[in-house]
Length: 504
Figure (cartoon, helix red, strand yellow):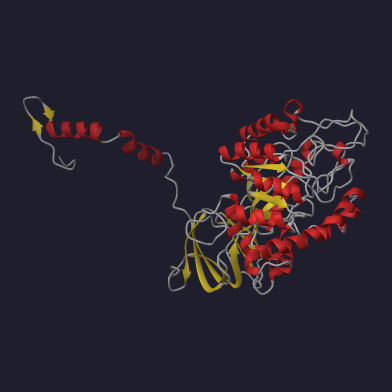
């Protein structure tokens, strides 16, 4: 029965027959809430979610994160936080009155990805006394500012591979909910370390302790298979996206050697097994040749640093498809500006011993076909300078297109995010950057990003010579502030806090 039929009155029963049938149809065939609720909401001034905003971006040239060349004269249609379409002006006509961002004098690329950052770390605080002066709040304050600075440098996604427990997880969630401004974060917990290893507090008096969670060994110190298994499970319990393990000594840690392996193959296999069973990838800090091989044999997904890799290690990485994330820029900073910030002599000596070797071995790995993803160890040098590594990656063997792909589509593959970031294509997040020069001709163009969009929102726009309409975004409360410096007095007794993660 059509519900728009004329009513018929039954004189014997004194009922409106068709009206009665209409009511039966309404309550049995139609959910009254679905019918009435929108009317009630509208009567109180509420409405359904508005249609997503549509913006058209004119690109002078486009490098979409794949291939080896750019395309000229493209239009990118953004709908809400996603890319709706990409094509020529003929394929995507721009309607009259549409919102247009004119970047026709610029090259547009996908938002960049840095696979090795420490957002809670500062590159101006190398004096070892800060380990004992700082509370965890110092890292949190720094992370808020560093996240915003990183995003404005064009890095719309990062992997944080070592910070205080569980700073990166909390920062990720605060950014995702719109409370803070920053990149998309793939978060690890503290790097998992053996006792006396790269992640421990070494060569101080035995009574000195810095610990937030002693009963959990600060979610990072693990010796033997059982402790390794437990700490991985505990980190996953608290929301990490990736597991970071220290498979060798480090440069910026006290009392260990970068070349020394720090976990057995058996321990690393258990760690990888637990992580992969929970759907988490594993990043292994490994400078030394044996530590690299141990980690690759155990099945880790990426080798971080890879400084002293040998031919056997390179061959293993190629055979197993293990990614190399090599921080080959920061040697300049460590042997330069960091010395002014009281970098300990032990770390200076270590860096002098391996810095150039790392670059040379990176070139060997590239030539052999090892898969490379972009990662800089941001926090060792100042956040926001992430783009300076592109020059060195090209100098030591990558083509400009390969270097860019290492920070876009290839990095997204390592992170397991290929369906959402790393390319300019329909369905991907509208994470876009623009540079004024052609980065395929001059890779250093990526050191000066002029325009940043994340999820369809304009984060940064240097208005001249760009002509655009800026969409509102929430600003960080620390937009114009400097990071806070330590105010607590020096002490030879460790105060409650967290031992900061040891990058490099």
